[in-house]
Length: 401
Image 1 (cartoon, one colour):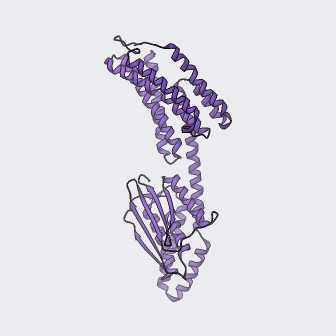
Image 2 (cartoon, rainbow, N blue to C red):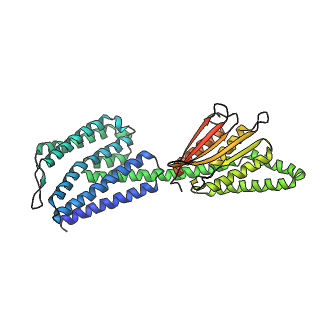
Image 3 (cartoon, rainbow, N blue to C red):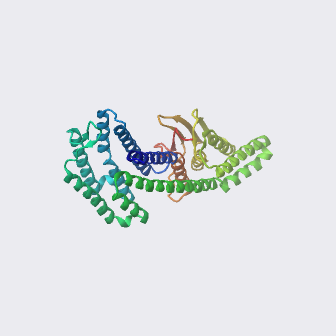
């Protein structure tokens, strides 16, 4: 194989690796934002630089117009030094440091900026260029490049040695090898490390979502609610058999929705969650006739969310808002499509509540918040009205499915 074939093969492998990594990051899009963004940055630069290197080699080999060859050569020289900076930022993140406040990063940015400035000066002045016979010519300031070859790895290795106890054995090995190899090579090595970390986080997140889903389903099977409902049905059978049948029907729908939530692995249509909530409220309205009123304004229903998201919030509102000594409880449930998400709002006019940190209501809300984040990238906000009552807002990204 000729040198052009070898270079082309290496570039193609780097491009395919980068695209594969980006595809995986898209699939695992609900993993923590920072490692995802860093992975996207490193892999995108790797793909762009490999494609540019491939285009540069092809342009020289097939004798493309000289201005194009020189532009590709300059672009490659200016962009390549950025890759080590991205790798360094990820290295500092693995050490538990904020790269924006690190002195190591300041030194590396200064050295990289100096290197880019010298490269630009050489290319723009013609000190490095492509000759008419399509050969890259010029290598001025050899002393400068020699210093940079030794200075940058030395800074990397000193930083690595001082932080070695903050890294795992695998991380120390990968970063040591990567800091001693060219930019393309160490970017691939670090990208492999980052992708393996994302795979681990993705698997842990799925397992945690499974535990959270099972836990919240168990929390929803409240013995007191089941007991009280059955007692209400018992007395209704003698006083109002038709209404007793309706309550049994709604209670059956409620139980079936809970059973479905236990085995559900992903998000569900909002209509299904709304049906579950409606069944629960119908049972409660039968138990607390004249004390509980509900208003729905849910024109927007074409989106998905984790199971057992809306119903537990409404149950909290009923549990903490109903009081025979106070005015009837009014609950308002609405959905609204925003610019980049759907907003679900649950409001009530009850006394509001501020449960202690270890209570069931707070644990339930934290459970819902975590499942929203991990399963669809959603968020949850809760606030008390000044005049009493509580407002809970759920934000679900439009792309959730």
